Length: 137
Image 1 (cartoon, rainbow, N blue to C red):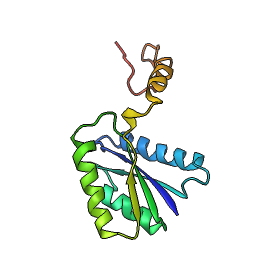
Image 2: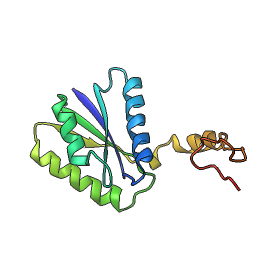
Image 3: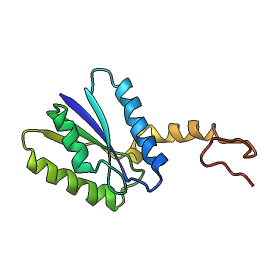
């Protein structure tokens, strides 16, 4: 069984972590037969941790897990921290094939996504706005 684990940094802001969990749920709904299980995990500040997220995939019956780093650049977390945690879990579970996808920032879709997203900029004055990054001044 194939699983996909979206790995993010984690935040003290609960709503930010919930956004990642909701994204994983949407990806799971849209993945069709590609992934029987889609989950999320966090490097720090939120649960589940990356090792625990990998274990959840295994507990769901995964024999192959793709780790999707939800990061925009190849900083220390992408280059060192996440791979070390994944490698340790791989050593504990040699029967499971675990592979790392490229981090999100290098996706060829990113330029188009940025242009599309720019079209949705908030233009309100902040009154009753639900956009989390609204400029209210």
